[in-house]
Length: 382
Image 1 (cartoon, rainbow, N blue to C red):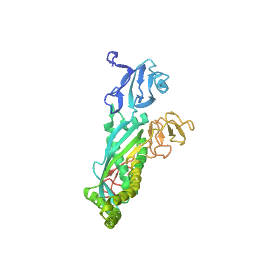
Image 2 (image 1 turned 90 degrees about the vertical axis):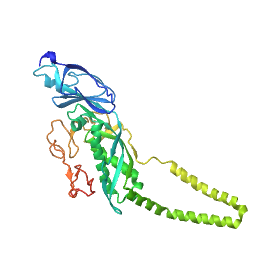
Image 3 (image 1 turned 180 degrees about the vertical axis):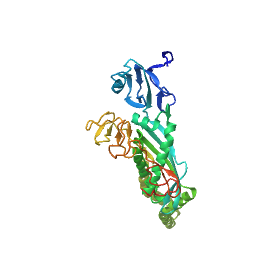
Image 4 (image 1 turned 120 degrees about the vertical axis):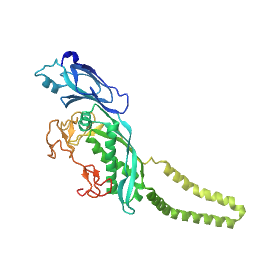
């Protein structure tokens, strides 16, 4: 190709006009002729990942960077022979949006099956919202984005929705015996669901910042059974109320009509302390289903487990690199870019666990799901 047709990229930067773009590649299609010494501008809440010949070589944080020997020592060795450092190179730069993406929807497209100890097989619907953030740009691109020129929240929302629903179904099957116990364990269910999702999202270089469960709804006939059970539980209180009213009526009859006002005043005076105590108890709660996850300035090294600064590129205790290129799909071990086998579990680095099909209904489920989303049966190998 002649030099007249070349388009040199000398100033690389990106702004998101939509607000929902996670990754944008420059150029959007193919590889660009990036001039050696080009300026790379990375804004706050962004990271730029430099790719050459399909390999991620470096990640750049906020600031203005010059693409030269100082920034890309690996690329310097590649270009030193035979072209020299003055030649343009065909490469791509992926800009990753590191802001927190809020109000992403999750929910059961089809009701999930739950085997209730009292009601039998029940199908439940659940839905809510969640917030995510990219924390490992290179791992995120290598595991989810691939070679796409643009990657939006819509692309990741569908997959994460499936993961959340699967984890919700697993926790319900393992810890909840009957949905009559569900209201008392609503907060516990929310927190446990967030903890399980943490490792799922970490495999793709993402973090869950907040998760909200808006509702868990059984079918109308099951809801009616729950309401009937609640009415039965309230009968002792109704009986005490009836006895109190009967006693007040007898007192009024004994004292005569002139003492009615005094009897009512005394009864209200006795009831006010309990009413105020109950009011104070109910007023100090928080809304159920919200899981605030504080932003931590520290993290833990995946190899030695020591607490280190969240922005550290290397662990000061063991020297392990914190910028993750890819992870083992089986044990989560950080892998080098050219690793063929996992040093922890010994499995091939490119091996991906296959989804399993339920032996009872044939439905496809996530590889590490414990219960079938369609019929609620436990996976035989779990």
